[in-house]
Image: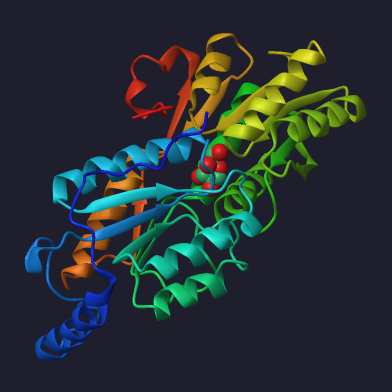
Length: 337
Ligand code: T6T
């Protein structure tokens, strides 16, 4: 599906010509208050609504759609405007032009899930230099000086939980493999690291390696199929995100190994729910994208109001098996708000 850009509430369009005056007012106010990061008047003052933009990692990904729903609901509650944009693929070359064009539009604040920890540093520095308050949601870049707040799961711990879950499913022995996204993504790198480190504590489990799928389900299917052919005795697979899990489930089905090779995924999109129900997936580690979006907007608005923000905020991770789909239904992702 191709969701439309989401706007939380219609508001007065900020007049671009007022920005230097607003900036000057903000600087004077910050100077008068003597506080770092104080960015000026709160929403509603001067008759203008705050303009926020959420730049996701991928438009059609239910993790980010759910994050957009949370951000939109919070924006409505706080009386600020929010629009949501995202690339067609999870790719820095596609995300960077979006970042640059948002910078040129000069919203008050941007919530961003950077698709690469290095490639997005420069565009995000430019965004900060343009006076735009920046909050990171989900992924991060390797420059902690830009965002006033970063909201994410503890991804390393998530990988560890996935490893413990898979170890139990395979009876603590045999070969395990990771299907990952791309090197350079802060979240999925950390999940794989957490998984591999945890597996070192399991002497009868052999980690046979990992492949990358470029965030494409068909590439994940190809890579997992090749691994199944190379290791016919493979016991388990960890798929580090929603799309990797989808591709891995397809490969297991094609090889007639569904349920024999245990599959633990990350994320709880509609396809993962279906695959948990039909036995293609044994467990997932779900995140809280809705809360990440809500908190992201809260932190951005606090920063704009000159209130203290929290540099890092961790949201919950919840392992879910087929049996727990009803009791943990609040953690399942949405495909629309
Ligand atoms: O797992 C999420 C997100 O946390 C990650 O950074 C990228 O992939 C997802 O969006 C799921 O596809």
